[in-house]
Amino acid sequence: IRDDYDEVTNYVANYVKERIRQFNPTTENPFVIGLPTGSSPVSVYKVLVEMYKAGDINFENVVTFNMDEYVGLPRDHPESYHSFMWKNLFMHVNIKPENVHILDGNAPDLDEECKKFEAEIARVGGIELFLGGIGPDGHIAFNEPGSSLTSRTRVKTLAYETIIANARFFDGDVSKVPKLALTVGVATVMDAREVLVIITGAHKAIALANCIEGGVNHMWTVSAIQMHPKGLIVCDEDATLEL
Ligand code: GLP
Image (cartoon, rainbow, N blue to C red; front, side, top):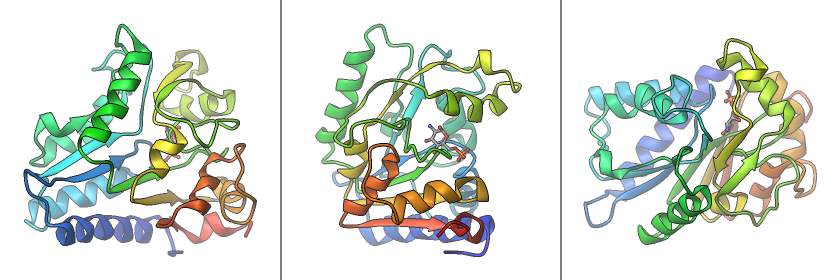
């Protein structure tokens, strides 16, 4: 628990930096990280970019897998997760474009796209550290309430609650928010050797309480972290209101 969002940001950015440093990645043995979008990680990415510019972190041998992407939104749409990641992180650091993996929400065969993504994760030896955020309904990636805790990467219909929450990125217009997304599954996240979830703000207090004080439950999919041998939640004071 950290005082506020800024403290959470600094903690997480430093954590990522240290983990990459300790791992000491090479071309043959890269550091594989799972990454989220949303407002929670925006400042973390900003700090990572500053660290990169100061010579404190190197992305040359880092391989990334993003959690999710909207279906049907053009890749270069400002709100696609593809655009988000390049704008907030990738274009500012020395990551190799071939090391970036983001699901293609416009692939002709979406099921095949999801299978390819899982196969690629397996091919590189699995994910070392998965960073995540949650929705106010406790979803991780786009694993909406009711998602199987053994789910893998797949097409998912967004919950109405999520569509409302994400309308702020689409001129507040619910009708502009895509209704489908591709998302890693709960099991895809939990297969990572380490999982770190950022939870900040009073609007996520109920979700945090269900996540760590409720039972492991497919209605609050982030609660699966309770079963993880190396799961870490970094939250601010506001998010702890219901604990
Ligand atoms: C979306 C993403 C999630 C993210 C959530 C919370 O639904 N698919 O991965 O955790 O938003 O976003 P924010 O951090 O903006 O609250």
